[in-house]
Length: 156
Image (tube, rainbow, N blue to C red):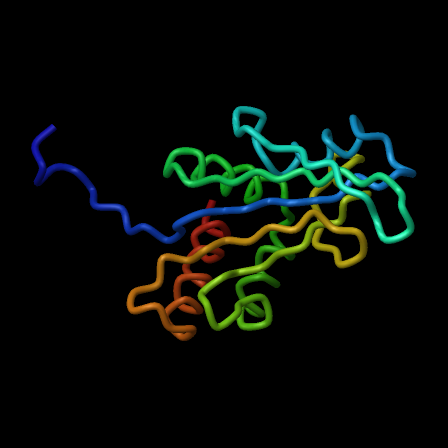
């Protein structure tokens, strides 16, 4: 295809990191299934076995996504599984989820994800950090990208 016929896609995200904890009282397979509600199965993950504050075993599940195709696929999964009202909430409240380093932080309810439903949540969450491709790297530029990201999701 000639270069002039290609549609130039604007890069919105440099990387996505998804992380959650498997506590001693939880079944690792069930938490892994909840994790996969957010992260597509083709994305590799790492497991880190650590000791908790009271000496209890904890497993940290992490997926680091840097390839453009995997980033798009992960965003598609989130956009398909999150309700329109929650996507709208993310768009309208993007400033609350954004830090000064152009990272967008979202927390999903791990218990709901274990039931196959993606919902925003704060307690014992699945943490998602999106490194936005803001240039220059300023919070206001990242905020524009965040709003564009969720606006595009709402159009589908």
